[in-house]
Length: 423
Ligand code: ASP
Ligand code: MG
Image 1 (cartoon, rainbow, N blue to C red):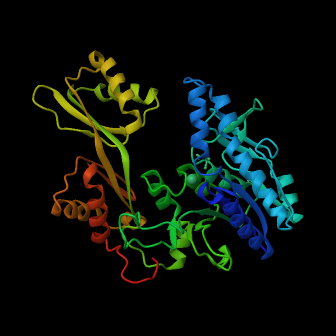
Image 2 (cartoon, protein in one colour; image 1 turned 90 degrees about the vertical axis):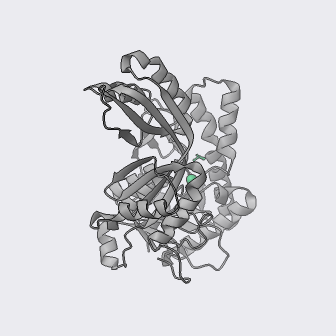
Image 3 (cartoon, rainbow, N blue to C red; image 1 turned 180 degrees about the horizontal axis):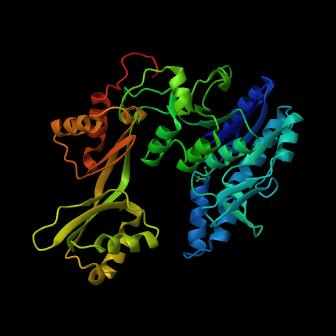
C-alpha cells in the first residue's frame, strides 16, 4: 500500500466527460489498495476567463479580490470531481484551501505555501475517503483567500504530497511525459523515462511548460517523488504504479539506475524574450548597477547579459534580455533614467528567442557549448547572446530560426529517436 497524491490539470478537467475519466483513474488507483488525495486545476480556459472579468471590472484590480474570483475555478472542479466519485460508489469529499488549511505567505496572486495542516487529511485518507483538493488556492494570515501564481496547482500538489509524506506525486496532464524536446517541432523527440530535479528545474524555467517551476524546486527541496503522465488513457491502461510516465529523480537515484547518460538531456525554447541594447554606457564602476538596479526594483527579471569590451572613449555597449511582457515597462524606465545612466541610444528587439540545452552530463564533460555553436553556425544561425549554468547553455537567436535551431541541436546531441524505445 502506498500513499499517493494525484494531480489533474485543466485539460483533464474540462467538462463532465473528462471529469468522469479522471474519476475512473482515481477510483482504480484507490482500488489497487492505496490511500489517495487528488489535487485539481480549474477547467481549461476558466482561469483566463476569470482574470478577464477582473480586468473588465477594474483595470487596477485589488489582488485580494482577484484571488477571490480566480480561485473559484478550482472550487468548481473539486466539488464536481467529489460528486462524480460519489456517483461511482467511492467515499469522497472536497477540502478547500481554508478548510485544510493550506496557509500561504507573501503577496496575493503569487502566494507561497507556508504550512499545511495535514492531520485531518491523513485521517480521512486512512479511513478510505478520497480527499479532493482545489489546487492554486490557499489562505493568508489575515484569513483571506490567496492564489499561488499561474500554473500553481502543480505546486499545491507537491506541497500536499510533502505534507502527507506521500510515496509519490503523480501529475496527470495532456502529454504522457517529459520529452527531449517539443514533439510538435521534432517528430523524433523521445520521451524520457527519468529526468533529474535539476534538469527538470532548468527545463521548466527555460520554457518547457509541463510543470510550474516552483513545484519542481519544492519537490527537490522536500524530496517528493514526482511522475508526469497522461490522463488521456483508456479504461484498461496500466496503473501509474508501473511508472508509464516520466519520473523525476535525484542525481543519486539516477546514478543507481545506471541509465546511459547523454551529455544533453533536453532542449527547450522560449519565445517570450526581448533584447535591449544600451549604447555608449560609461565604462566605469557603478554603471551597470545604475542600469540593473532600477529594473530589479521594478521586479523586471533580467536574464542574459553581455557587456562589450570598452570602446576607446571609456564607453561600452550593454546588451541584455527581459521577458517580452516587461519590455515596454523596461524601456520606459530606462528612458527615464537616461541622464543618470548616461547611455546614448536604446535599441530593442522583441523578435528574438532563447534556445537552451540542458543536461547534468555537462557537469563532467567539456565541449557541450562548442558543439552547440558549431551546429548553429553550420546552418547560418547567428548567436546574439549566451548564458550558461552548470548544467545549461542558452543562446539568444532570431525568433524565425527557433524551430530550425531546435531540430539541428536535437540531432547534433544524438537525441533523435532511432526506434520506438524511450530514453
Ligand atoms: N488554474 C490555474 C491556472 O490556470 C492554476 C493551475 O491550473 O495550475 O493558472
Ligand atoms: Mg499547468
